[in-house]
Structures are given as C-alpha cells and as structure tokens.
Length: 245
Image (cartoon, rainbow, N blue to C red; front, side, top):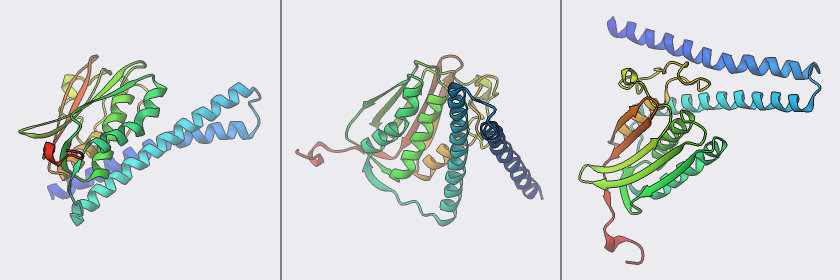
C-alpha cells in the first residue's frame, strides 16, 4: 500500500509539474501571437522583440519535450535492457557534445575549453553519453553569468575514465546539493531567475551514467561554480594500438 501511494504521489507530482511547465510558455505564446495578429503593435522593433519572445518560449517547450523523451527512453531501456556498451574513444563524443552547445554558450559570451587525454577508451553507448554531456553542458551554460567559462576535462586512472564539466556559474547552495539529482527537484527559482525546468536534467544524467556502469559526483559552492564528474569503466589506449604507431 505504501509503495502504491508513493507511486501515485510521484504520478500526481509529475502531471502537475509537466502541466505547469507546458502551460506557462503556451500562455505567453498565445498572448503575443494574438497581439501581433490583431495589429496592436506597429513598431518594427517591437514586432521583432515579440518574435524573439515567442521563439524563446518555443525553445523552452522543445527542451521540456526533449527531457520527457529522454526520460521515456530511459524507462524503456530499463525494461528492455537494450543498452549495448562498446569500447569506444570518448574524444569524438566530447567534441560533438561541445559543438552542440557552442551556440548557446556564444549567446552568453561563455567560453568552453576542452583539455585532457586524446586517447581514452571507455565502455559506452555513444549517443547516451553524448546526451548526458549535453545536459551537463547545458546546465553549466544556463546557470552561468555572461562572460563566464566552462571547462571540459577527460582523463583515466585506476578508477576508470573521468569526464569533468566545471563552470564558474552561480553554484548550488550547500543545503540543496544532496537533492539536485533527485527527479523533479528544482533549486529556488529566485536564486536562478528565468531558468525554469522540470528538475529532470541531472536525474536523467545520473541514470544514463548508471546504465553505462558508471557513477556521478558533484561539487559546488554558491557564487563560485559547480563541478560534475562522470566516472566510467575504461582505460588509456595502448600506444601500439594507436593509428600510425
């Protein structure tokens, strides 16, 4: 009975959160479209501003749907055990994830630097790892200040392959650090105005990493920044196996 009630509460919270997060941008889009359609705005600059606001809310809806699709895929994969891990170099996955986030970073004048070993191999599902890294990079950009930086590092040691995403953004309050990877947990929006979200991003990343046999650690200081490290089973490619060796 307790388990049934817990699942019912999760379902109710999920429906309420999703409904709120979808309704807010839809209401804004509807209002701006009606204003433009009725010709209430004549100034071309104002019209362009309205178009920009509509685009922002459409992008927010798209992000919400992408998170829900990711969550659905995770749950399906849990049921089907369909994740197929292969020993692959992580360099291309890192570069693709960074490339996918470069435009968002440029809009806030945030630099993304990639340093680390070039020849690291890990047991991964490349699309899954790429999505996990994109989610981390997206957070590092979203919760950062204009002109900030994000550093992506990769290295291997006896514990496995480490992929680190660090930023100098707003950071996470110490009291909330232990909860941010829980589903639907959101930091007080007053601390991070305009960011929104379902509180699914880090929970999804954690689940993706666990599916690849890895784990996730996080350090953060409010007002200083955040560091997230993915640790996966892997190794440095032997020199004799590298192309041209």
